[in-house]
Image (tube, rainbow, N blue to C red; front, top):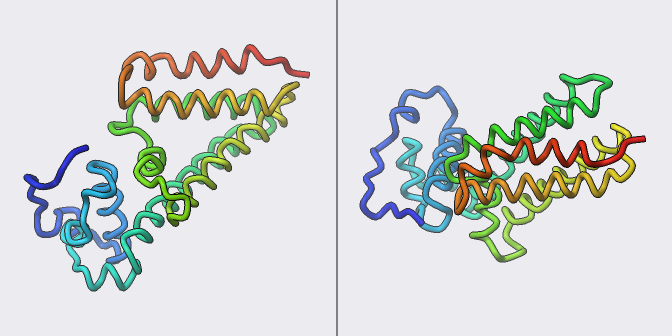
Length: 205
């Protein structure tokens, strides 16, 4: 894991100083960026406040604890996923198969562009305790993603939509992990072909 021990975070990033975002928005953006780059445990509240051109008092006025700040970062990721899913489905009215393929293509592109993998997957590894507020958000979002894939496969007329949904979901999650570890180029280059092959291999009514 990367460490911030030898890294000087400027007193208010250029983005934070010039931005017209509210203090809460700046803190949330800074926290997400630092958590994603360095991990949850090594980043301190002081570093987040400094990067957001704010202070600890303001941070705690908006977030009662660091754990709640982590959970809100996870909620932001979940809301972003929901928005992208809706946009994909809305772009293919009456064509659930087209929406499913487009979603798979989008995931493949996302996997290719992610420097440190999925924020939620990384956070889940760092937060083994089941009662952590962020852990509950992450688990709920991942279940929702799986269920949405199954629902779309059902709408597209696949004979075994749950099996296809599970296969797509597990391949997507596995590709994210592989992309940041042992076989980056291999997983990134082939993930869409693998996902599409799964779709083709399942029967439709």
